[in-house]
Image (cartoon, rainbow, N blue to C red):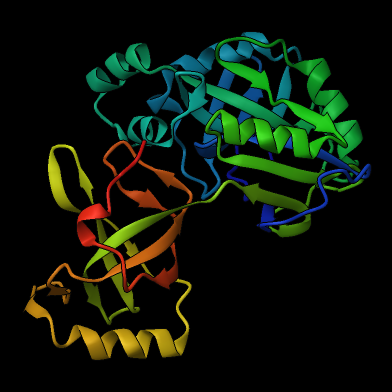
Length: 305
């Protein structure tokens, strides 16, 4: 496995879960890119969950060689950039897409990245994927000396409700519940690892819609410096009758259809949507439709920090 792309084990997602189950660990869920760190001696390579090699884009990760106290290892991590005490997806996403060496050097100083380690697949000639999570966590603690470049994730036993509440108060993405006896199954979405995310809702004005490749509402919000700014295309959560009713009303307020197939409408209709996070460009990530708001004034659909 060493220095070969690996498809990691993935968590399933649930909105509710027993957060006091003694059979589970509860981890902080950081918001960045899933990364697999490979080490042999002084050599470090980092791959994304899709198998893309990104080592040169994060020169600071070379320092992880000193923080990992064994000669060989494969460590499962989340690559993140911190800002104001929380992980910012946009910052790491920006870093991960840079290819110009000069820009990479500047970015590594201005927004340094960290690897948050939460599992170990291999170390010093031994494959750990058939070990249970308890023993893998113990190995991870033994082989990593925490540093600015790599550190082990925070996890708790039984008090998952406390940890989830902490993430809400501190604007983190959520937590992951992991069965203590779970083995590591490559390229598998496991029911023994469960994501519990902190979704939020907001009232938005409908600016348009598309029918292909999937039906989606283009929704917008008012910001202090711009009105009716598109912030998301919402594709999920619609009942067939809600979609049909909307299309019947929308044809009466059509304005124009653009070359991308979006039918824009007069901004007269509002809806409530659920989202996971707002990006630095004020776009909403991982959205779903909740309900139409026939009595909502579109002027009141404002972003609230």
